[in-house]
Image (spheres, helix red, strand yellow):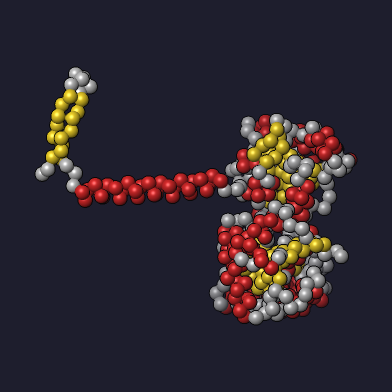
Length: 467
């Protein structure tokens, strides 16, 4: 073995001493060098991931921007929210008498609730509809919470559209962890429950509403709501006196039987609007599923819970009680054999009669094509990955569609005054009565993602659908 000489100084005596140390083989030096490089590379990758995680926008940053106004100056939006926190968006204005009447009550509730919790578990952001900054500053001076800066008018408009605010004062409550909407009825809840005994007033689930209700089948056998847990559930609002209901019910019966025979975990509960018990009994004989007995007030409660406007209405819920669609009737009519059951929307959807109801309810990105197979294939390759990426990160403010030669697409083109033969990418926001048409160079993955993010941030200029 070869040795090398090292000259070592003793700390105790300050004398130099020569020692023999084994010489490290070259392969060993090379091995240690590779290990060191690998560790350094892994550390860099880890640091990049940590830095990316630290820099990633929170839900409330995307919703409200990077900065809010606090009582002591600018507050970083990244500090807002969290586990166990409720965020209230308070749409209000100084010129509105009901707002000025409600604001002191809200301030009292806000301070008393947070004091009782011993920690700030309820935060509010004032979203102003004031006519000028002077009124805004004066009114905000009465409030103990945060505020969206007055100059950010486009974001204020976007928030009003997103939460379908049709009047003020409105208090929208959101889950501070993930931003999911809890209720738009915050104002009414505070007036009805000023001590906050049921705060944050999460709406009951179907199972909570029906937990003590005895369900029946058409053989008058008694069932409980627990017997449908773990299944896709259809809530069928219907009545014998309604001609469209009597027309649709046989279609639904056939679809139900087909799904049952194929082993699908699917159940329906009939919620009657019949005017007499005899009418209910006669109608229910045709149905092979369950029902809430005639005259039970829970039918009305469920109708209000889902804002049912007319009949027949079939609402579909998944196994976790989340809404699949409020328009199950179209799903059954368009797909009677249940090929697409349970009719959940995909990241990228084909626009047709079955899926178009979503377009009426929320902002949608739609790529109108000429129907050529190559064009549709290209659209899927570009838009599909964007849709999957944004939905996986829960960052998508739109539902994604592509359109071919279906009559639904032609009708929608006519409605928003688009040429019949052009390939066009648009964001259609029917609730806000706006359409945003993308430039031709947007049709890349990066371009589509930026188009959607700019819409979410209120940076796009849209055309009114009202003419």
